[in-house]
Image (tube, rainbow, N blue to C red; front, side, top):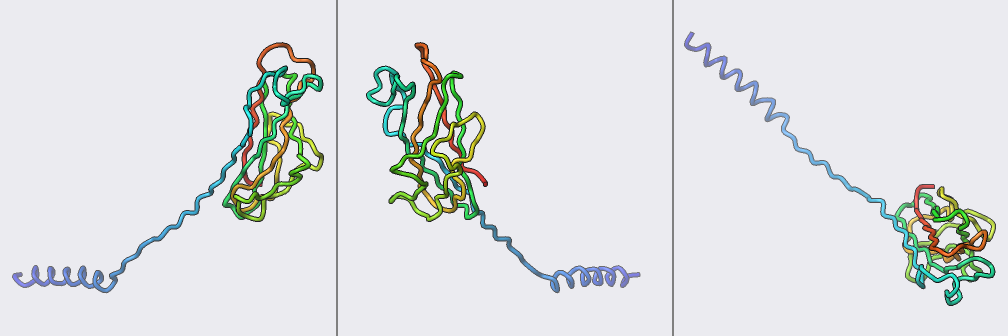
Length: 178
């Protein structure tokens, strides 16, 4: 009996040590994350708050509208088609917002400080689009570039003569999957 326990221990050590040495390995998992980076920036060259009757030319009480000329910059690093959508909320049912194409900037473009060659194309064929509370397509077919731009006219239009008070319209642009 003296030799059996040592033989069993030696046999167990051999069995445990053998496979560990024969099957030694190592592995590493390498991961690269490519983040989706997108941005939208509405640049308005003048104040967004005006006096309807004393606006310095921004408003026309005779025609019942006020007009701003923003530049909307948008960027994406996606190579698949993206789109720019817009929606509006207004403080009064007599106020609507019309997006109008400018003759000087008839199409989406890449300004000198931008990069990329696919700024997309207008999603609507008319010269104007009345924005609603739900997202509407503005530019489609956008791909991989930074500081693409559109330069529309925002017209805040009153359907009737507005009573004294403060009226607001909030326009939201979003870039998303097409």
